[in-house]
Amino acid sequence: MEDYNKIIESLNIKFVKARKLSMLKSVRINNYYDIENSLIRIHKGNISFGSPEVSVKEGDILFVPAGRPIKICFGNAASAPAMNRDEFTNSQVNFFDKWQPSSELSESFSQIMLDVKVFDSVSFFRSLDIPAFVIEKDNIMCNLIDNIINEERDTKAGRERMMAMLTEQLVITIVRYILTQKIFVEKLATNSTYFKDPRLISIFNYIKENLDSDLSNKQLASVANVSEDYVGQYFKMLTGINPQDYIEYQRMEKAVNLLRTSKKSIRVIGSDVGYKDTAYFCRRFKMMFGLPAGRMRKRESLILDINNK
Image (cartoon, rainbow, N blue to C red; front, side, top):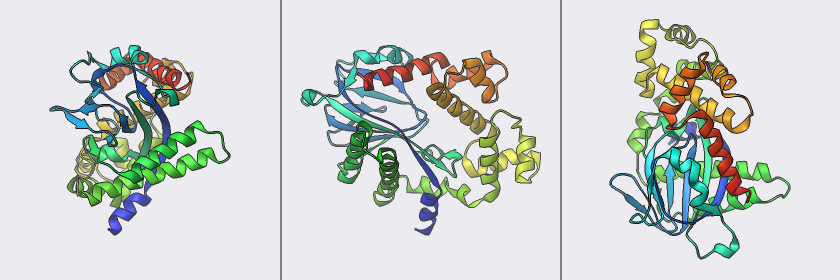
């Protein structure tokens, strides 16, 4: 248990956004994906996911780890039109609307987006390589989600601090749920070994601080004080992913954050995350996320439009 306490202490947890929506009509998304972890609490109606499909019952929570594309259906699966993520991005206002007290009888769900990183460097739940899963009838987690939604809508003093505290409680409760329900415990034990290796943590931190610079295996080897021939094997042995794939994910994650929070051009954003060739950056971005960088920015504005109606 002491190892798990160390893991929890190492986590940097950040609230990203929250929303409560009514479903206007059913929709199936073939490659639902987000760069952050997502918790979707069903208030009323139906959601199913995966292949074969698993139903999420009213009162349950669907947890989707960061970077894990899944098939998901909001509403009645029999009548839901199938879309890819790009098509859904352009039309989601036709399927969801901001929840109002007057719409309490309609199908609805709450969604919390949060970022969880180890030593503020590597995405925690993604690194564990766990799939999306259902959290059944957990009143503590449901109350935390409701409280975060309420704080996000409020203007009381201390709102930001309260949301940060509630989000930390929510993440700890998820880890406790995994441990008490004995799900993914083997993955948690196997894929968290890098927490104990200071050389690997040094690589993580170096990558984070130098995404716009040379991140060749030769450079990483000098950071970790291992040979260039060995550094790739060493990194993959501890993390399950080769270093260049990890670097690309970190670069794209930062690019998404810049698209969401800045007005920088796509050319500048590509350069900021280490891509000097804008066309190549755009190709890699679309390959990873299934939609162009410009559409990702539009997608975020659509989400904001729904929340601000």
